[in-house]
Each structure stands twice: as structure tokens, then as C-alpha cells.
Amino acid sequence: MTERHAVRCTHDRHAPAILAILNDAIVNSTALYDYQPRNADNMRSWFDAKRQGGYPVIGIEDAAGELLGFASYGAFRAYPAYKYTMEHSVYVRADQRGQGLGLQLMEAIIEEARLNDVHALVGAIDAANAGSIALHQRLGFQSVGLLPQVGFKFGRWLDLAFYQLLLQTPAHPVDG
Image 1 (cartoon, rainbow, N blue to C red):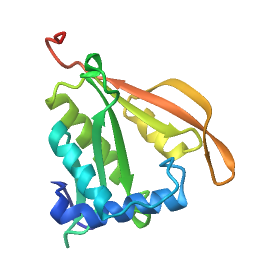
Image 2: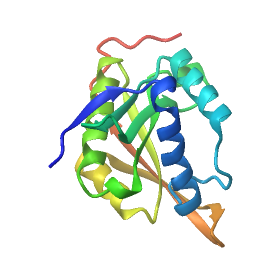
Image 3: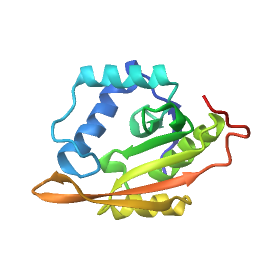
Image 4: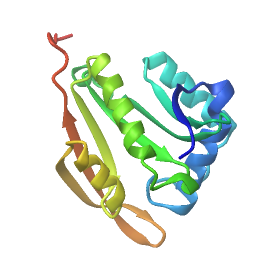
């Protein structure tokens, strides 16, 4: 097994690799309900939003420094009462899937959420994505809802499944 290590992703170092991973998911899967590949400007604004929100972007690199996958989270909804709830995402490069990277990335993002007093992590997963659903269930996520036929891609209707993990944080939540 090759050496792999977790890193904090930055725009300057990782934007092209993250862009390639996201665009592959857009073009070849229903992991993202998007039609058009993204561009370098999208990556700048994406990283800016992560930085401004204090949201982590964690990657896994191989020994040569190539990004193999990444995970992040961001605001679930824009209203203040959702401040302890985050929606996460995890993507693994197509040629690296099935090697445990998704699990490693999810464990890292869950730990980051705990450290940042997140209470609920929410995953919005295409209901046909059995691999992602199994990964989330393995980590203790519970199915909390299904939105039938809310997406349309590749000539068919797509169902969106929501999975949630409740954490024991924060110790002392506050209003406002």
C-alpha cells in the first residue's frame, strides 16, 4: 500500500486537483446534481467561501503529493439557528475508489466537526449511490429522509437521500 497522508487543502496547491475531481463527478455521475463542469474561477470563490466561513477542506495525498480525494463541510442552511448543522461532502478520485480513502476522509471531517462544535452533519446523497450510503451507515449516519424525483440528470429522475450524524457537541449551545 502506498503512503497516504491527510493535508489541509489550499487554493494555490489543490484547486486544479479538486476541480478535476469535481468535474469528473459532474460529467460521469449523479454524485453532484450539476450539468456543467466548473472552472478555475469557481474554485477561487469556493475556497474563498470555505475560508470566510471557517470551513475545513481536508485532502488525502499520496507520497508524491498528488491529491487523491477531499472532504469538506459548509452551512446547511443560511438561517442562524442552523449554526450547529453542517452539510458535508466527500469525493475520491475515480482511479482511487475502493481503497478506503472515503472512510479516511469521512473520519477526518467528522473529527474536524467535533473540534468545531458542530452538532449535526448532514449528507445529501443520490439514493442510487449504494457505496456512499454504505459508507455513511458504517460511520453511524442515520437515514432521515428521502426526496423523490427532485433531480433530473442523464435522462432520468433522481431521488435525494438525507443521512445525518448527531455529535455530542457543543457542550453548551447558545441561541443567537
